[in-house]
Length: 227
Ligand SMILES: Nc1ncnc2c1ncn2[C@@H]1O[C@H](COP(=O)(O)OP(=O)(O)OP(=O)(O)O)[C@@H](O)[C@H]1O
Ligand SMILES: [Mg+2]
Image 1 (cartoon, rainbow, N blue to C red):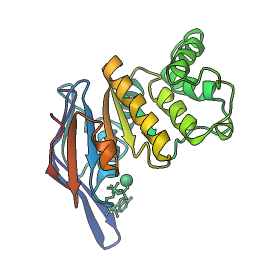
Image 2: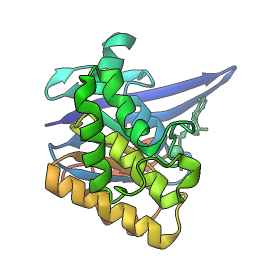
Image 3: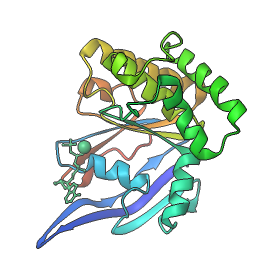
Image 4: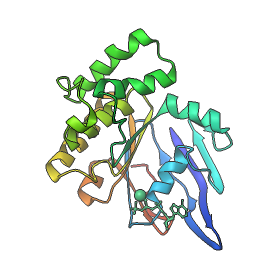
């Protein structure tokens, strides 16, 4: 098993209001799986993704990566873990605005300490794979929304992650561009065996995956991530 949780809970405390955003969540994500997460607004989808990435600390439960417990890692160890094993694709692309497509894709390699001579050739290969070989020197604002999201996907692949965490990656795209991005994710999942956990509002997008998780009010109501 690539990533598993048991009894995962997350409580946000805001003054006197406590929100149980996740309760008793158990997921199993196999190596190479493509798991989609659906649920109404506020059901805890983003909270689940951020907790699995160590960007939020769980209030209860366990997270295991390849059999090893990771929830007690220090912040620094989590950061190193994310650089090594995880890639992120978000709804708003979150590219660095003053870096070119090529530089955006090289950035995670720099942070991970990839030797400088390897960074640019690898970034070029990744941008070719997302069919942006002719846009490498463009800034994000000089690219269409669909192209920006493809740069973000190339960037997510920079350190050859075991798992890509995607939060509404097609949420800001027109239907045709959304289909392109979904097809690209599917292709990368199948060709590289990179596991994907994708949050989506779209029932159509949810069908791209090989397994599904449905959340309501912080609890899993169907699926656990295995097919
Ligand atoms: N930082 C926070 N502090 C307090 N409460 C929060 C915080 N972030 C989220 N919540 C609450 O936790 C619950 C789950 O939020 P979350 O963002 O995970 O939902 P979601 O399923 O991603 O929704 P959406 O589809 O709208 O993105 C919501 O009730 C929300 O109000
Ligand atoms: Mg969300």
